[in-house]
Image (cartoon, rainbow, N blue to C red; front, side, top):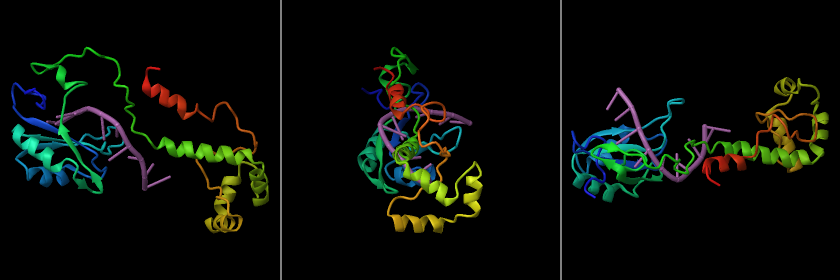
Length: 216
DNA sequence: GTTGAGCGTT
C-alpha cells in the first residue's frame, strides 16, 4: 500500500508521481504547473507526446516530493475543470501494473494486452461516417445522374470541379434540394453506382474494433 | 479541422 504511487525510482528517490488524465490536447506542462504547484512543490511535470506527430496524448505526469502533497493535489484538482475538461488526477503507476512493482522492478506476469487499443484514432469515425454516407448515397442511383448533370465524367472531374464548380454551387444545390451536398471526400467515388467490395474499401471498423479487443 | 481511454521522458 505504501508503495502505491511511488515513482519509477523508489530506491533512489521518494518522489510520487501523479497521473493527470483528461487533459486537453492543447494543455502544456507549463499550464499545469501553477495548478499543481499550489498544492505542493512540483518536482517535475512531463507530458508524453506522440513520437510521430508530436501532439500531446492527452495526459500528463506530475511529480511531487511527498505523498501528502500529491494526495492533496488529487483531492483539489481531481474533477476540476481545466480548459473545458474535467481533469482526472490519480497516482501514477509504472508498467502494466504498478502493484507488481518489486523493489523498483516491474514483474510482468500478464504479457497479454490490456484489452485496450493503444491507437487513439477516433478519427476513423470520420471515415466511417463518410463510408456510411457514401454507401447510402451510392445506394441511390440519383447521385450518379447528378454527376453527369454536373459535368462529372472522366477522372478529370476533380480538376473540373476545382475550377468550374465553386462551393457556392454546392451550397445552392444543397439549399435547393434540401439534401446534403456531395463534398469531396478523400476517396474518389467511382462512376460505378455499385460499391466495390474489394480493395479501396478496407474491412469495416467492426473488425478493427475486434482486433482491439484482442480476445473474442 | 477533428479526437478522449489511458500510464512516462530527459
